[in-house]
Length: 103
Image (cartoon, rainbow, N blue to C red; front, side, top):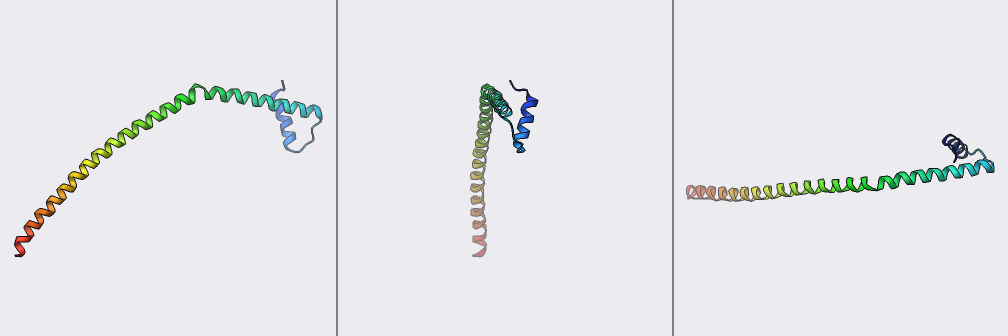
């Protein structure tokens, strides 16, 4: 196992273009494999229960919001229909009042 400090130093040298001897190159390759394994374990642990539960919770909340919004839209649609009917009735009454006066 390559110590973290050694791996970081070798990585730094390599990324800055400093030539590595074969032993250093082997150590750096092993350190990269260690990093990949550690990252894989971390990701597989995180991909287990947490994201699924979080996603399910987010979907559930989104569905509740959709239901609420759909209900609000239905209430507004009914109110709009009532207002349209009231406006039509008022136009009709106005036409009746204006009609006899002009004659």
